Image: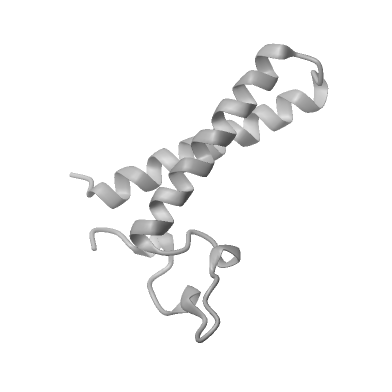
Length: 85
């Protein structure tokens, strides 16, 4: 059974996949209104899920680390190692 953290991480990964796929589609269909709408929706979902994950469990990427007194990215397990905790 998946923990709440794992469920949130999977939702975040799915949203990121949607953004990347929409990006690729829009590269060849730049004026498609449906593609642009989908990209905007997935981007907003990704931003929301990323903010939720990081507020609960810490940075999802090294670029999200924003502390000035220590490098928090290596202070906790990496996102793919964070399993059940």
